[in-house]
Image 1: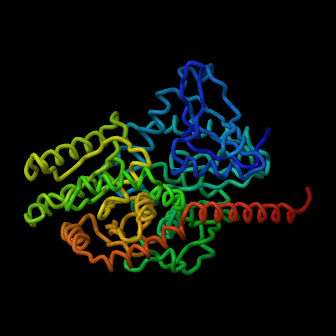
Image 2 (image 1 turned 60 degrees about the vertical axis):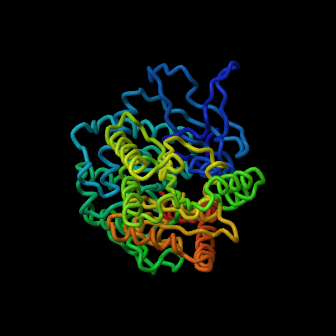
Image 3 (image 1 turned 180 degrees about the vertical axis):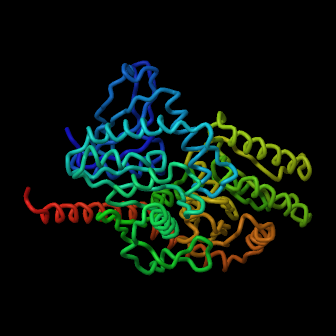
Length: 505
């Protein structure tokens, strides 16, 4: 059965578990995160489909069904598993996407590695994704492609499904021309994105950067913009942009630039924080801490996330304020990325070295200043730490959005509001009012933010957290879902009107 909504994303929409009875497809253990969020759209379609890759030794004889029907709490939908060899995955994802694209998207030009890129393989894999999506889609379907490792899919899809509504969504930052144009394939990438009906971003700054890149490479003209709504324009934040682009024109076609930040499942996080077992865990954590204050930081292990800068700031705190030794702890959850990638292995080693140095220099038998967790924590346990911490410090050097900050706010309770230190270079900084803004590239800024969080009165904490929670709730996952569905309908209506207006052949 063909689908009227096809989501194209590299990950499969379930956990594949091998049991004695065979392979079982289990729903993701947490309803929070991008995969369950996207699956929510499938349940709202007449029939939805999902396209992802699955590793195979032989792509011509992969040893698994290429398309399976899944029925779960989100509904019944098709999953197309595109067979890719381990080498294809390494080339298109770990090398091209992570070593060439990722550092440029996040502004780390010095980490950009062009030499090992196999561009023909990247094209081949993107073409295969496009073919699999086209096979699942009705002629006028909405085909929704996600993230930078599938940049070439829209152009291929336009050849295969000329009447489809093709949308693309970026989950990362998007840089301006001076950074993006380092990529030697920049023209092919942008020409592909301009074959979409809509290109989506979290915040206006990324949308403005894309418009500037498109203009620099293709001469595409911005023909419509608007003043950025106040709720998307936190004052004084580095990523703020007061004008939001809406429509580009290129080669006679119009491309919508859609700004809509993804949110968290606010109500679910809040209800989880109030569950009896989580409240009991919070009480136990607080009892173990005693009078000691807890700073919590949660992220992946990546040079963009600022984990090293976080540790260095905490080390400076203990150096310059010896009276705090034994009275404040840092819990750093830095979930390890792919250890086969040299850049991430180096960051993890640096984190472990710094943690050992701080604990060795300032710790005692009774107290260790830093608790480093390098494995994923179940959501309920993580929410307990969100609720127990005195403040959170989320300080990426660059981040497309960052949902941890909103999760932390959703988990807080009246009477124990806490504080949030938030990097100006996280996309969510333009959404969340009430955080302590910090520039993670500045020692003085990081140091002052820690001092401010430690000294903040309960009254100020309450006022700031109320503002933060209003913001996080305003931009929750329900708001994003409704905005995207409305956008799809508007695009389909526009495409239908244009089709009706064309003269008969």
